[in-house]
Length: 101
Image 1: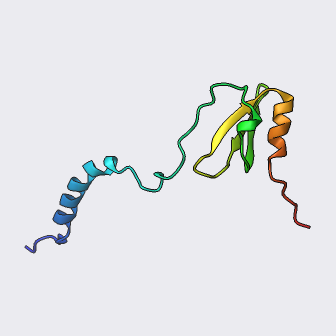
Image 2 (image 1 turned 135 degrees about the vertical axis):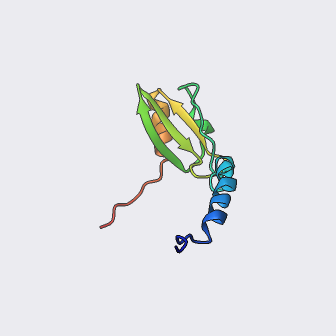
Image 3 (image 1 turned 60 degrees about the horizontal axis):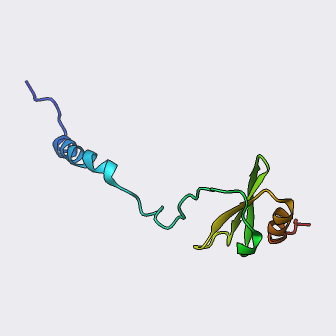
């Protein structure tokens, strides 16, 4: 009676999987190493004088408007304000973009 066909790669493949599975959870990934960390906003009474262009409007929550100052740079920071005069100063720093004709 002939022996059933068994590929020769099954044993090495199983051994490789057994060795690699414990390592799968330890990889941190290098792609996220350069991303800025999440910032927590503690107050909503920041001044626009501490903000440098470029500025990006992030949103409004219960009257508190938040802006990313020095947007997409390593020194980026998030400042928030409830005062309408401060909000207007932040908005004045947002770059004006033209719509395509």
